[in-house]
Amino acid sequence: MQEILSALQLDHSSEIIGGEHFPSCFSVGELASASIGAVGSAVAKLVYDLGYAASAPTPIIDARLASLWFSMSIQPIGWQLPPIWDAVAGDYETRDGWIKLHTNLPHHRAAALTVLNVDYERNKVSAAVRAWDAIELETAIVDAGGVAAAMRTRAEWHTHPQGLAVAAEPLIAWSKNRSHTPRQWAGTQSRPLNGLRVLDLTRVLAGPVATRVLAGFGADVLRIDPPGWDEANIVPDITLGKRCSFLSLDQPADRKVFENLLANADVLVHGYRPGALDGLGYGETARRSIAPNLIEVCLDAYGWTGPWAQRRGFDSLVQMSCGIADAGMHWAEASKPTPLPVQALDFATGYLMAAAAMRAITLAANGEGIRNARLSLARTAELLTSHPQTSRGTLDTTPTAADFSGVIENTPWGQARRLRPPLRIEGTPLKWTQPACALGSELAKWL
Image 1 (tube, rainbow, N blue to C red):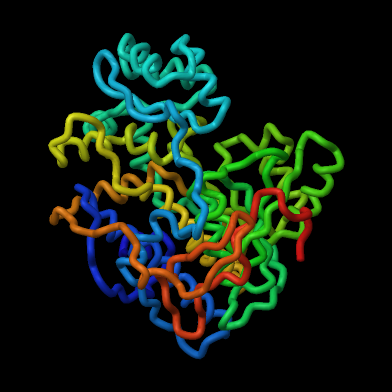
Image 2: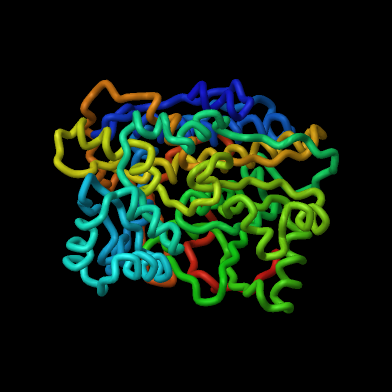
């Protein structure tokens, strides 16, 4: 918690109740409580500094609920979510070790199958992978436009050029202050972000977690995706409280709509790799010209410096690359990669992004200038792996009836239950006023 508060330039901590831990060699449960606690501390500072509350309240974090929110927060009633993983995604034994193939997206799947020269069948993929060295195959798939990660040890990551680069980065990298004045919004103690406009250009999974939090404190969160995009296995979980629209940025009419949204946004949250927005014509100079008062919070997978700064990645891949899966395998005395019990890098980074956004909002509203924040899954991994867990952990991650809110959520897919919020702040509840929605279900405009 202290490392996170220091990165956020906060000294106001939270109270954590409970203390069950995930079975893991690293302190995943503590990371859950600390990252959600950071959101609470940032909100408490915001409502006090902006005069919404007479004193800064003490946030209370339910450690069990915090851990449960590091997985699915939604429980469908009478319907099911699609499988999380594609049929050929997963860990495969190579000639000299292990590799993870991430094939959930069609173009990533096609790249892996093309390199391996096999059909879309798990047995054929497994047989083909065994003929490769892990790093050789990782390189070939990445070069083909896919995503994969060879399993490395912590020691190997510590000496890898990217591991060295990430270790030298701050947990949250802040830009220099810009002297523009932010737009006023209609915040109150109960809804401190009411009227604040958040443009969400994020996908699986850290970014959507961040913007879900901002929606939970009243922000108008508008997510933009290309037409036809879907993440059916997680959309019901992470679009809670948001509005979602489709825009095609290769169409002049949609670009005009997007630029109007950007010009009138208060916060931009995106998950593009360094320089990726430049390819769409919206590099930093263009964004500053369109929206000089915009606060930006952004993330990537492997860090913002080093030879892999441009590399695509996901939580499960970073766990393989940075030695978490190998450490877990030895800790569990297993014969195959053993990742964290949840996608903790995604969720923790998402909550840290939300906290960073609220710190930037508070500082700007206080007349201290506008700053941007950059985070990465790999740097969050460094935070986690510096805190081994001393106990084996006994947390049962199966939610009970008491873990859920009594409110039934009416989603486009059917009724559902939602976990109770893991964070309590007197006078400033974390709550969502609209259910999860389908991608592309609303017009691309601000309320």
